[in-house]
Image (cartoon, rainbow, N blue to C red; front, side, top):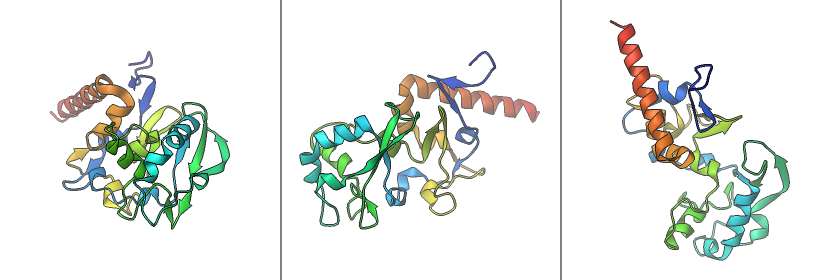
Length: 200
């Protein structure tokens, strides 16, 4: 806790929906439709460079709907954004109305390449690709509503079986570490206990 009582973990605060909304049974990010990738994504410049360093391995995982010309993989324009580690980011290219790294089955070639090399599935993948539908804005971890109401995998509601933070456990562990995620669990349990007490 900060001095003001705000719940924080490793410099991040959290939108209330992380703990108060979630998914009904059978829905959630594990049912991913890959629609979130249709317009491309943003990557930190260091992530871009890491991907380009592995370009030949990534090309092996691409199909005929993708381009193997790495010059088309990223936009030319670089944007300043303090939410990225280097403070600068760049968008991925869009070919055939989808991110250049998305194959015809909706699978990420970056992730497939890392697994083929015996690495962690997210070893080369940009952070915000990993986290979605979790987003980080101004150090606040929250829900990205881009596909809210359009796709069950990215639609949260107040009547839920699995809270958002548990549905995105692996993603939040990637961001916060095992110990950081455990603090989310403890905070959620505290909220549930407070709610139960208030209903007595």
